Length: 372
Image (cartoon, rainbow, N blue to C red):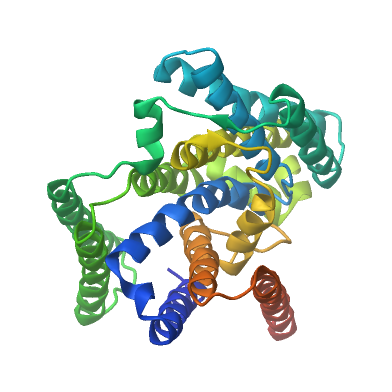
């Protein structure tokens, strides 16, 4: 991880300490469990958004896609009485199709992403109002509802913590061996051991905190799985390297033979698909689809990415950073709600932090340019 990532982790710790001192409820197991569950929707959206921004685009429609695909899920489940498997396939297919449509317009018809997704934000919200008759649709299927409200057993949590710590230890050992084999400088063993102790301690603390309530919530596991998949996609595959190359310098990427159009379209397919997954989690958690579902979620997702170190200029950003950014945003929401702060203050604080994050990003780029 880079310095920015450690800085954001430090910011999360400070935010938690601040709210923990002001309100003793913040550090209760129940509230922490609720906090991570609330974070899941923003985190899932941010995973898709970070790749879109890295490629030099923006997606303002994710909130409306969440609302529309959530409505579709509720209609398929409640009005049509279809089994959960069919509901999930239909919902995810709808999200991917909406992303495909927007990606095609952006990539192959050269319409700016800002315009396409701004239009999509309004169109999809309008379709939601039309197909639901502007009403709330309840979801009663117990299996579907469990996707947003169930918890894994405490034993599963312990197994997960053990697996994560073992994975981190193996990764550290492999990295050290690889660097030695190629003659690169290797960090002192004490530093790697310290990192392992910190990461392992955080993992164990998280699992114990969740287990002291009801166990690890289902939505958090979804976030972990998606984060691993897309982190691998962005860091270990040709597709991921091409996305960063496009965002860094699209002209150079084109001259090097990268198919920019197909890569761009796929990014929006992923964004639509992840929005549909977020919709499933949100609809299941609320046990209903509402016409206001997903409103302003696109701004939370963008803010999470920027706060987590993604540059709006493209070419820079990580999945891990976006997750940390989502945790920052949700922690602020949760803490201010516990303190009874009015909603307008929450908008002011989150908006100010977003502006500060962008300002710091621009300042860092200017400083690097000046030094070079």
